[in-house]
Length: 474
Image (cartoon, rainbow, N blue to C red; front, side):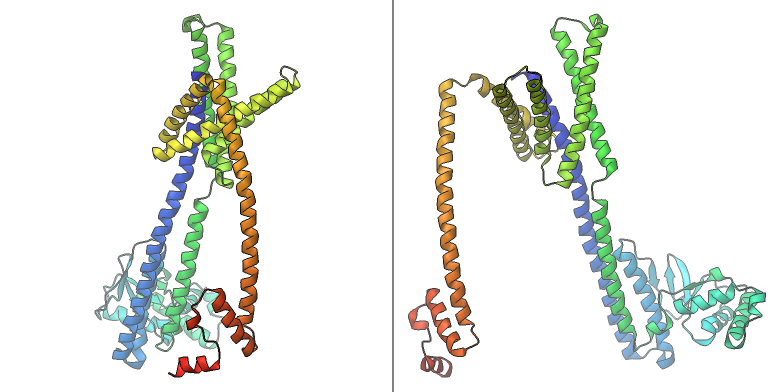
């Protein structure tokens, strides 16, 4: 076998191994994301479980009384929900509950938050009282999500539209506009909570937390779907694999073309225009084959259950057999030559594939193992193919014939065993049907038959009603 053939074969398997390595990197990234998501889910659910325990303690102590306890519940729910929602997507916990009866209830991304869950004027009267008590307060206020929708509507409403309101809507509009003007508040100073007013009442908060756990589960499923989607093969990566494979094979074609000219005794300075034209053709052909190889390997390894080394072998065999078919069509070779040459090509690429796979197993380093395995295997194959005597080749043929006969014998035995298993299974099924018949007498007889069929000791079988009574009553 020529060294150039071994070099080309090794280069082809190197490209295949590189593409396989790209695929493996995507899978490893997916596994890492899924493992991280397991931790994220555990952290998020742990936060909500801790919240439930904390609120149960709060309700037992009746802190704030019947009219104020929901305010303390709301603070804890807001902090826990915010941190759980961050945790499930892998973000840091940004909420910190202060719980010190001071001007600030909790911190959110370092911003001071005072929460007001009051029905009167959507909680705006409570905000006004807080501003009067703490005039230097520089943080934000938070009101229930459903209240905020009404607040935002009236806070941004024009005077002309507000003048058309009547009844409770008019009263609320005037109250909101007054607080905004007198206290210098604007809509950016107030934000919505993650929850509605009714969600944090003591008789509903457990249901609220359960719903949040369901939301966390759904978000977890979405994160895993996203991870799987991101790990899928992409057109960009496929084009990259195609371009690299084209460059590698084209470069190899260029190098081998130059080497061939040098073997003819020419120096680089002596290369003619025709020489460079020949080298250019070799380079172009190599680039074209490399592009086809890269695209094919990337497609086969990602969309079918085909190892990269095998995919490369398929492409190489396709190129080789196509050339032989063209020679046959041109009348340059006979049909017998076509078959023999095609068999040799397939044998060559098969040995290359096996050697690459073995090398990758023995040397689990991306690309390197496949390269070493292919080169070693192809050298050994070349030596064997060029030096085996007719007698040794006949031994191999006879050995293959013996193996074929043995396979045929094993196939016959396999069929006989399968038929025996079918018969035994049918017998077992009929006994099983009797043992579970709706008629108690038939079922009793069937259970005895099953016990005998299963090889149960006769002394341990309950043969009649007297045996049953003796077993359960004595």
